[in-house]
Image: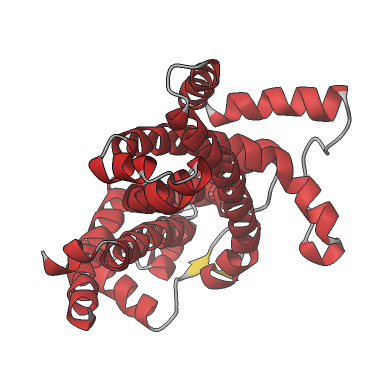
Length: 314
């Protein structure tokens, strides 16, 4: 098992190198001069040249890349020109709302999707199965911002149950914290819930048709135990994959939801930084999300080995 984990960790290193090169290249290939965009049209040539030197944009691209990577290894992600603050401190101050929102969205998705998917697979062709299929199709088709606007109009404007927008820190009260994140978490997690429903239903249907399930039925195993102890265990590999991808999707897809509900997270910081061409902030956030993606996929691969011993052997 140790050898299996070591191989997975080593395989991540070249992926991270390629990811960093791609991110750096894409940011630098965007048309326009970042220094000119930051200072505006009224800036003088001297001011623009001074900012380019300050940001290191006067150096060759390859040299800029290695300086950027070297600084990252020392914990230096650069300086935000717009906010006049280090990028590291900006990310730390904005990452808490995003993590809270992502975790809440995933909890909502898992609590709704997995039980409904299991029930739909057990009652294939019934009214419950059709309702679950309609919900999952709606979740996949409905954009998060559109669902967010609908939730805002219904539960904030009409019924006044939740706030229209804004964010409350957990230090201001756990209930207020949860209340401020409920609508954005539903908007963000509904698509993930739909995918989980479909995959849970499909994988459970495949497992329920296997020979060992039929043998368990013949032995008189109760339906609840049949679903939870026998069938569910063999769907864990697929569910782990979906759950891991949902984490990445929740983090990367939070930009629209955070902007809509005025949640001061990484997504909103990213949108504002793109508008202001805040160079180092954009690079750092995209790199952070990409690294989280790679690490989560590595963890998923390792979990495969624990859930299914055949993966370790292969």
